[in-house]
Image (cartoon, rainbow, N blue to C red; front, side, top):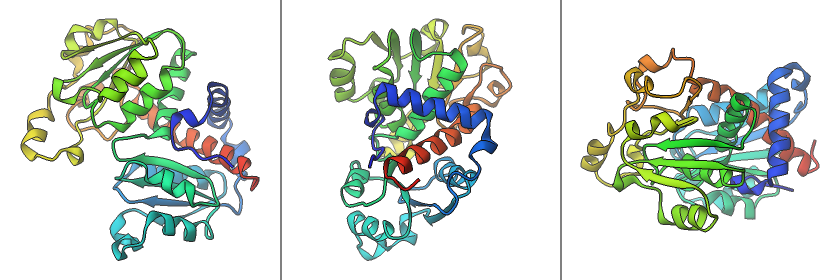
Length: 307
């Protein structure tokens, strides 16, 4: 039985197969409308979520399955002191697969260690968010036809952004992917990402502070929000939250075939006048997330022998 806790839990070949399946679901959704008849997904969300929780539930319902779970810690037995380990032991009796989001890094690993059903990490603190990464790389592959040979600029909160850390983990395994890391000094990628992932693997990367200085060289621009919930100081958050704003004027300097992605939700970092630009693909990303999560559910249920 497999779990999905990190993008690296699937090999490159397995990832390609998963993305191929997601693509087939996208173009032929009716072929999969009954693949999960009688199956249940538990969505255990100890942190707020809109897209991730609803897309997991939509993914299962699109395939004939049903959903149960909770949308915040306050509505769970965590308020009574129940541990993640005990919760998942109980939920394993109710559902066939579980997606868990938790503010503590490593909580999905604890769940997997005590679970008899597949576990999907739906975000753990500032650590990993593998299904968002799969949606990101599916979108890049659908747009460009390949996950090799391009330059990606990742802009905004690179310190706390779990989507950023997961995306870097995933993309360093492909050929000739160059990274431009755009952030204020205070929100640069953590040292372990810089040293253990980029430097130690000989990855081509540079760190800059101004988006305007590099936007013309990018094939993909991955914007992120400054995450208020990760800051210890309200003043620090206010000082950083509008550090980068992508608008129509800045896009004038970008390549005609550069694509803009964002894991959402956004605040002010992408102006609404960008939405109608044909290079804006963040809502396409949202659609791809459902197909990817359908593919993940099918793949993990098959690995568990329950499908």
